[in-house]
Length: 251
Length: 250
Image: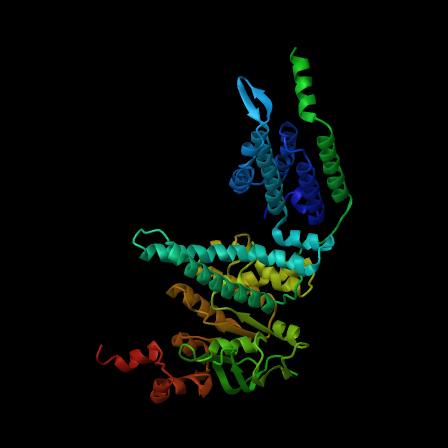
């Protein structure tokens, strides 16, 4: 992991800020779009300050888009009331709310991906535990993260093995059950071995990240500054004010 | 008391499905010995290794490490004493970077970050892969992964090094380098392996398992010269010893 001032901030501060960000973004009304846009400043600024690989994080963030669009898909069918007019095209509330869901999902995903990139998942779990999350839950979260990777690796191997002998035929429904069952058993076995390897090196249920926990002035400043900004963005229509100011200057 | 003693006394293990993996296994390995545990597939080697680290509990009998029986109370100390290197390094390397992975054990021991860094550097330098410390483990070659897995265990400063199939999956050069590395260790060493040539080079003593029971325990060369024993246990002589026997025809 790279090292920057943001990387060195205590994981708890970053977790609190990310949580506050997500709460603010999610608290907007279902037809809100314009006021969500300034919130993109948070992940963009953190990416710049921590010198994170922007293209990679964007790709990871966009993974949530299909799911978000799927969730918002019924909205245009049920909410047909016209709420906006773009030129001669009337836009119904359903389309606006679908776009709003997609934007909020993107914002939440971007903040989460940036948090993981700038902190590391084991440190986040440690921070959540120190913030009061029960230890078994924090450890479960960490195992879930680790075993997702294991599941993915095993699935790739099975797909490769299937492709080699399938003569170009796609996986039939009849084979899905046995493949899924086999995948579960293989992943289970692999996860068991990883757990044994962890126990063999002194793991007793607590994750020690090596980064000393220190919530000092920098952390307080980080939390307070971002939270104040989020509250301002949530309560004030910054986008409209900015637009009005720009138009005023231009005219 | 020496922490380097490993003793199995009448060790028997029966799995839940009724399979008897170990039958009345008894041996004593003393300080500084290098011992191979060999046997055909399913002979019980891996089960035996799991007992040496307290991952499995005996159905009957006991395992003693440094005169202490493995119990829940002694387990943390025993896992620090016995360093277990898994056959597949992918099972052992789970942290985001090589450095973090090797540091996992020392951090669990409660060391200060300065000590952790020193231990990690020493362990990675010892196995010759300090240069890959910032890489994610899945980007390493097979030989590098094996070395990092060994470093992860060495960083805990174990008295006893237990390795499951250390040379499996390595190319000849990486295998040769690893054998050279293992030869330099002064720990008590216990290996399971099908690589009998490696056994011949590294282990003066060999324990032969067959269907969960100890069939022989003695000097490696004597065991590899006993064709009847090897035949009975579904084993063969190491290639180095076969080559000598076949040289007139070849």
